[in-house]
Structure formats: structure tokens, C-alpha cells
Amino acid sequence: MRMRIKKGDLVEVISGKDKGKRGKVLRVLPKEDKVIVEGVNMVKRHQRPIPQLREGGIIEREAPIYACKVMVVCPACDKRTRVGYRFTEDGKKVRYCKKCGEIIDKD
Image 1 (cartoon, one colour):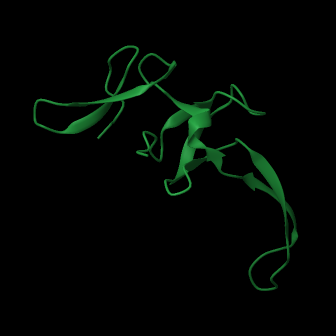
Image 2 (image 1 turned 90 degrees about the horizontal axis):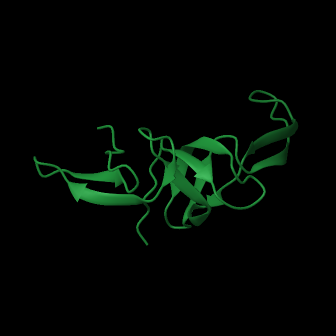
Image 3 (image 1 turned 30 degrees about the horizontal axis):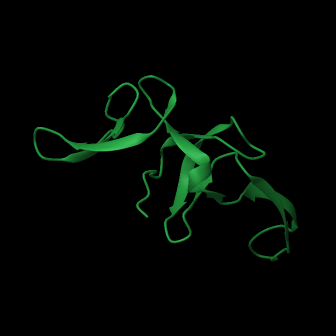
């Protein structure tokens, strides 16, 4: 299935323990249909020390979350929205907000 979420998008969690939280997409995992969102689905990992590289201890980091559990937040209307595709005048395919019609892609 095609992912409508890209790295750098602002998304909002729509279900689960982190419902309502917003964050930036750090990584997209299309084969698993998951995304990693900044500050969402935090898990604790026990890390062994490597003498020359890092200290050991318990670190907290983001874990992947299913892409169906997040929605893109439109930068123009600041609401979570479904994403559509259309072509611009110069023939470039861009994503747009289904609520307000503004283009989501910056480039």
C-alpha cells in the first residue's frame, strides 16, 4: 500500500496510548507500514556499555507505530486531514489537504 506520510511531516496520533499527541516523522518504514514519530510511543531500552563509544544504562527512545494510527496535520489550517494527490500547472504531482485544499508539500 502506498504511504501518504513522508519524513518531516507533522502528524497527530488518532488512536492508542498516545492519542492526541503531535510530532514530526523521523523515519518511514514502508515495508512494515510503520512510521517513527518524535516523542510518540516511547520505550525504554537497556543498553550495554561499550568502553570507547558509549555509556550503559536505560535509554528512552521512539519505537515504530503503525501508519494507520496517525494522520497528517495540514500546515495551513492546523487540522489533521486526509491527503489527496493532484498535479500542478507544471505537471508536478503534489499532496494536498482534503479539508482546505492547500498544498502540503513544500518543495
